[in-house]
Length: 313
Image 1 (cartoon, rainbow, N blue to C red):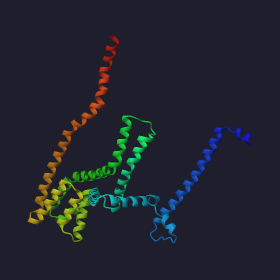
Image 2: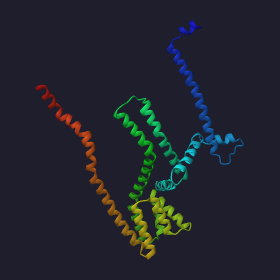
Image 3: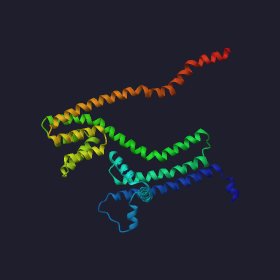
Image 4: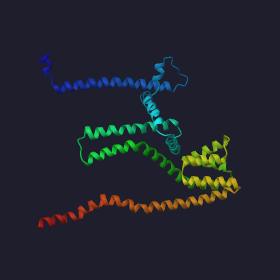
């Protein structure tokens, strides 16, 4: 038997083992895929019920079964370690980002705790184990990058979502204000004008106006609904619009006149903001020019002269 095994080509043996392992993995993954498709189909049935508790638990996605307990434990730890004022500020930032689910706030706190746990692990791996074998400035740069990602990663991601939503609202507000002015001056009321905006201009701002209308129809006052919208948006332009509308309701000023003044002011601010961005462009272009374009230009222009000088002297 040993003679037979020794006569077999090692490459054919490795190929056979790889083929066997591939067939086993394929069968396991196919069965898992079939079970996942079956569970997904069962989850779509509203009236489907299982008597077995284990089968009921297996209907949940695998991400929830594996990550759910971990996230729940980290959420409890984050609730104890983070002060209530910080948790409230995080919840406010989630609302400004358009995220209204309390679970997202708890997951953010859990990921923040995971980030701080990741920092010492990363430092141990990089500084002590050093699997990449780097040293000097590269080692310290990688360590600092890991610390920054662990400490500022979740907060930076949330801030980017807030900034993106605020920029979307800021860009849409002048056009929405023009449509409101046209609708009100055509004879529509403020609520009907908001309905016209919601139907014709989809976006983050229209969603906020729809929520304002919903709160007003549910019994809340217009001033309270507008103040809540201003807190959810968090932009100076929306704050100015809300204050103008509240003053118009308080003092009985014509809404059409207030809206036209707000539309003119927003157009001026939009033009000034565009001019500001245009003035910043040359300063921002200096960085790629100095570090990317100028070195290549110097090599092309001064390279032949330096070569000829070195050959002559």
